[in-house]
Length: 323
Image (cartoon, rainbow, N blue to C red; front, side, top):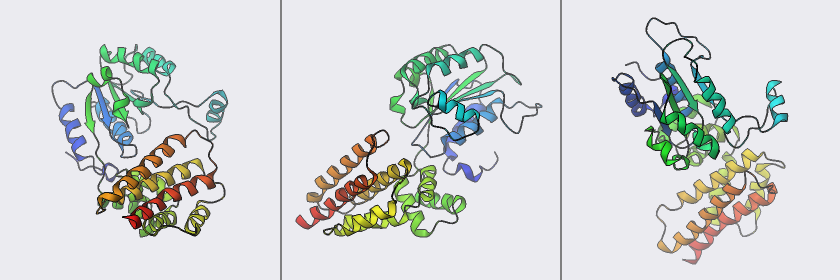
């Protein structure tokens, strides 16, 4: 077996299981790649699909493969579809639609283009709307000959139990901090050690998320968050500096990333604390989880949001002083 490329760091077990199945007498027709967002499931799916459809003696195209069908979020509406067709940035819909699955099923009525196998990747399958999931279930129950499904799931519990029961699961665990640092050194060589440490802390084992954090330049914010959680912020000066580091009009992505970074800071406080501090840590973490769930759709004032995050972090220092 060839060595795995650097892009697949931490995927050795998944590749081993996939290739053993691929070399067996009967390949399972449905697979779920399960793990948190950003650990590399999509890259794995695309590479694994190419191995699946390749046949000895048949030259494979270097670019898009006609026998690998990829479904993901469509443009949000007609206006965004026009932007996409014009090659401009566009917003995505929140779900994969039933019409997409029905069009896929029509495509599956034909034979594969180049060989005897076809791969369907749905990324992420846990974002299918209810009708789409039920429609896909019919194809999983009676898969067309030569068709294999690779479903990417960031939260496997959101998939229908009947879909899960018809698929084999490949688990993608969190990547170690050392491996994460190696990925960042390769992909983001401009990042300082401070920046890489912040990204690794916030990303919780997801290289993709860590790279996003580096691009959002959250190193200074991370240091301020740690200081607030440790020492408090009685005169609000640290919270003011944190708001300044966020900028006047931070993107929604940066706001969400800051909340996730604060969650990482709070979680890190659990190590070595007294029992009396645990309720405050739990309460702050729960509040940040709620903010994280609301922020993608709520129209928060960015300055007030980061101040609220700072106040939750300051509560940790207050609970330690009181214990």
